[in-house]
Length: 149
Image (cartoon, rainbow, N blue to C red; front, side, top):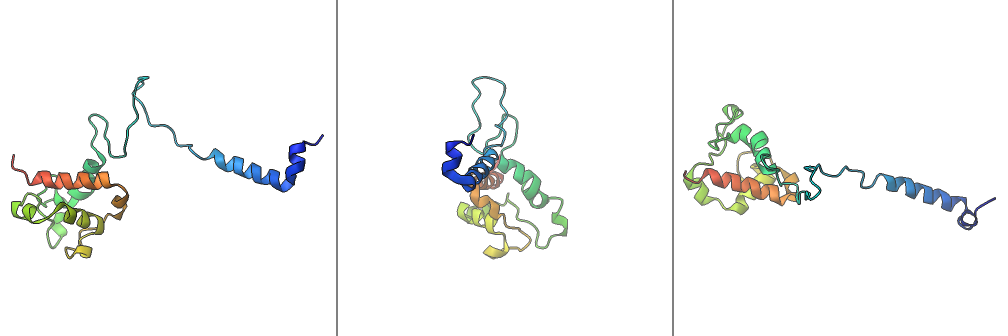
């Protein structure tokens, strides 16, 4: 016996519904974030939040990307700096820190050195335009190098 629903839609309508049902199966298939196992555990609220003891996304990016040239201490002596001319920026230079705004730092990080009249060796990171919290975190890291202990 044929269903009255199928009869009113016709075989094309059934096919469309089947395709929609199958395509909906892939949505939200990403697993939930891991929890501490506590029933009261709260999920993280943003992509840059680090779990206790883990670096933020900005810290991780600085360590894996920026420190290659700028060094972990911000002096511009990272492992890749030996082959660069001009040498990478020394973030501990107080005069430079005083002469650059946060907006300028963000521009350099996003667009790269060549786009803002600096060294072409400084690559741009346009993907950070969609992650302002990571960009702000990188600026904060750069600013910390300028503070006297």
